[in-house]
Length: 200
Image (cartoon, rainbow, N blue to C red):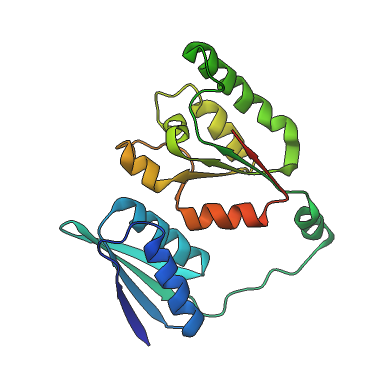
């Protein structure tokens, strides 16, 4: 069975919410989703891939057609003591909504935030996700002093989620160099799954 969703004009997480509603009711072999913005394209693609669909994207003018083909016979990973231990690790989510820490002197605040990000690695495996919203998304662009720090965290397995609506607002969607473009549904779900949430 093939299904097409027209999600033009929907801001994130609207298209993903429609996909969730659809997949709760049926299990199509093929899904095509039409969206008209880059953030929705990234979020829909990532969601379908997470659901084990093979994803392709075609551009038609200002629209994107994201197509997912259901993969046959997905493998189940057998639980091992190592994977069980990893699942048992406390999960800390850090949400950063600024490009500086505190108020008063902006230069001092920028330096303090860089030091904060550098020190996050001291949390070890408990640091689970780093979510960047509002001005925090500016940390992910190439000229940011935070870029090498964020790349280092990503290499250690920390999942970095970057608000797509915020990137679009600041016209930085095509300048992001690290992390996955995300939406408010992913952020709220992450808060729900985390053992602790730290807001900066």
